[in-house]
Every structure is written in C-alpha cells, then in structure tokens.
Image (cartoon, rainbow, N blue to C red):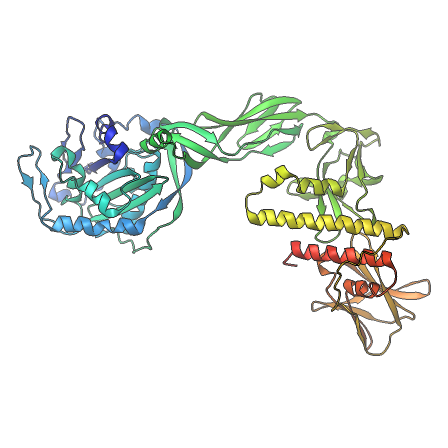
Length: 636
C-alpha cells in the first residue's frame, strides 16, 4: 500500500515524502483500513491465537488492489552504485522510538479522530539482520522511492531475500533533500504528532504492539538522505555488527518500468577486425542513470548529479553477416562496416563502428612494444599465414617462433644496442615465398611496415595517451618508463658511435661509480682482464692467460660452474644476460683459492680511469640507463 503522490508533491520538495505499511500474514484474517483520500495506509494484523506459528508467504498477503501486480512481470537488470551509510546516526533512533513507546507520548488518534488510543507497550529490541535489510532498502530508495522496490517487487520481499522469518512486519520510509540528516530530525518527521489519523501511519507503526524489534537504515546519495525503519514481530539471533559509516557499493536490480534514460560514461572507440577475428565486448558499463523515482527526478530538476551506476549491457550488430555477436563475443564474418550498439533494458546507451578487413591468410601486424626488463627486444603482435613467414630486416620468423601472450601471437626480436635506434622493416610472405599484404593495427592494408624505438617512445609520451591515465601512480610509472626509453636511446647512440669508430667527446657529466671497484683476493689464477659485450643484453667476459681449471660464479647466494672457452691464445668465461637493473650487482668469480668480485659497473669504473673519451661517454650512458631502469623497476 502506498501514498498517492499527487497530494504530497509540494511537501517533499521542501522537506520529505513519507510512506508506511504493515503487511499481514497470508494465513491470517485481515482487517484492512484504507484512507480513501490517499493518506498513509495501514494494514492491521488480526491473527487467531492457534495459528500464531503458521508459515507465511508475504506475496500472498498483498491486497488484490495492489498497484505492483503489473510491475512483477517487467524486465529487470542488475545494477551497482555507491551510497554512503550513516548507521551510527541511524541507531540513535532506537532510543527515541522506545522513549515514545514507554512514555506519555505513546498515543495516536483513532480512525474517527475523536479519541487518543494509548497502548501499553514494551521497548523494541534492535535487530542487526533487520538493520542490514533496512540498509538495502534505504539504498533502493535512491532508485525508486516507494514501498515497491526498485525491481518492481513489494517491499516485503526483502524479508524473503534475507531469509528472515516473520509473523508481522512493517516499513516506514522517508527521503530528505538537503534535510533530515539526523536521527532526531527524522524521528520528528516520522512521529506525526500534529497529524490526524490519516497522517499517522508511520506513528502507528512505531507504536504497534504487533512488533517486538526494529532495524534502521540511513543512506545518502548526493544531497538526498534516505531513511528506512523495518519492524518485525520477533527478532533474529544476528550478532551486533560494527556500524557502517562509509561509502559502500550496493548491488540490486532495476525494473525497466522505472528506467527513464541511461547514458554511458565509457565510450568505445571504433575498431578494425580481420575476417574471423574476435573481440570481447564489456559485459558492464559505467552509466549515468535517470529513473522515474522521486530522488532521480528531483536531482534532475535541481541540477544534481545523475545516479552513477555499473549496469550490464546487451550488444547488437547492425549487420550480423559482417560482424556477429554471441553474448559478449564479437566475431568478424566478412569485409564491410557495421555499427555495434549497447543497450540497457532496451534503451540504447552507446555505439561504435567496426570495419572488417579481409586479408589473405589473415596476415597482420597489429602492434609493437619494447621489452626492457631483461634483454632489449621488440615485441611484434602478429598473425603469420599458414606455411608463410614474416621478416624483420630480412630475418625470417615463422609461426613456430611466435609465443602466445594473452591470446595474441608475439614475435620477439632481440635488438643489439648499437642498432637500437635503427628503423626496422617488417614484411609478410605466403607459403610460396611471395610477398603479401597484411593488416596493421588501424585495419589498413600494408605491403611493409617500418617501426623503431622512437615510435614506441612517441606512443608512450603522446599527450592523448597520458590524458587517459587514471591516477598519479599511473602517470608517475609512465614518466619513469619514458625516462628509461629516452636514456636507452641515448645509450644506443653512444654504442653506435663507439663501435663505428666515431670520436665522441666525453661531456664530463657526473658519473659516480665509487663503490663498484673490482676486488680480487687469493693466488693469481692467470686472470688478465675483463670486458663487456653489449648486445641485446650485457655480458661480462673474464680473460685468463692460462687454463684456470674449474671456474665458478656466485651471485645472490647461487653458485654456478662456468664453461671455460679458448680464443686467440686466451681462456675466458662469460657471465651472460645481465639485466639493466643488475648491472651493479657483484658476481664473485672463483678459480682455486683465487676470487674476484666484479660487476658490469666495475668495468665502467675502470673505463672511467682511461683516456678514451668515446669509451667513457659510452659507459656513462650505460650507467645512466642502469639508474633509469632501477627507478622504473624498484622491486628489482
């Protein structure tokens, strides 16, 4: 039962709009008293004593004239949104209710307004399970303010949802706009001391002898404060809980009958797919919701924010022969362009275009990235035709060379540091060795593609890409990555100049390598020096004038026996694949009782003592690359 809003509309703009109900048990006889002028309705339960413990079905107790019957069949959707609860304040209302029930203010008018009814009542106990239910209902009032829930069901169904056993139940609800933020103010509103019988439905609920317990919920959204009192005939055994006074995500359902409009906050960009390629569409979107409920309508009238919620979407294609949809999976079928639309409960929210490109063998190179956490390498995201291959600067890569990463095929190409800044040319060939077209990441047909580390740097520093980052941590991480790539390119320039024999002037910039000095001890094993090999990773090579025998290398508690090789009259061991973050980590080389503690930066330390400006400039850039990598990979 509910108040007809037509008579009350002007009141709730300035203060609140209040509803009250008490539902009978289906097995009981009921005496229904309804005010014909549309005031607060009350249903009084009259139960035969011998049937006190009868089972109850709340839905069957709804009077035949209920306005919710048609709503039950409406389509509903799940919906999640945030409210702020104020349960410490809400619980203060228990004392106010009990003071009224046991004091001189325990009265209400009889139906003819000729005499005050003064029941003799005991205090209500506080039921924390009822409170949880009241909190759920308070949040639902944001979507639809009524004794009908946001999914179209009667308010009593919240008892079923929580599995709460009852014999009598009742609900008082209210919403304040910039008002009724305290328990005392709301209690005064519910008390209705100045009203006649028709306006005291909420007061009679609070003074009903049919109820023994209460739970109270208070939730705010924007400038609105929603209150719910839930009453029941006997309490649950739920333990006391900590009062929730924080922002909380609420999950419920919304009826299509109550959805006025929906606008997505998230836009989906147009995309290109090749034939048979699939794309997973989001199952939910963030959307601004307007409902037919009072809170939403008043918010719209007074310029308040719309209800921001997460809702599931249904996707449709304008031409399933070009691109079809099954659930959340979009599949490209043939060349053409289609519009993909999302809707919530039949209302369109957003759309984007998909262009399907047909390429022989579905050959494609859709993206590229840079790997810097170990070796320096380029990752190309590709599809290589059956039996065919791709080339990068003439080097062939087959499908078997690709690694599957997150459902994509990735070909990894090592980059020698001296060639780090050279553009790379990518081509595709079919099984016969014939050069063929392929699709790039924009859905365009290409016969060849050029990519460089500079392209990667430009992409990660693009202003539009930076604007999409959501928080300061992401921005700081992106800036640190850009610094690593920038220093890597400078290191590549230095290596290219050094290994080509070009003279480089050492700038004399700060390069503090103190603490990285090599440290040798024990009987000389014929050690005669060390060098660095700078390829896609850094390798330390230690030289000996004679065969040192068994050589071990220890680092971070792990010891490994090394292979001793011979070249041009010298013996040597290689310590390979040193990541940029580990250039300063000492490795202890041992042969007999001789040992040497040495890191890649130990070489840099010795090089800085030389007169070779080109070498000093190169190791300075290597050291700067190390520092930038450590900053970007702090866990290393």
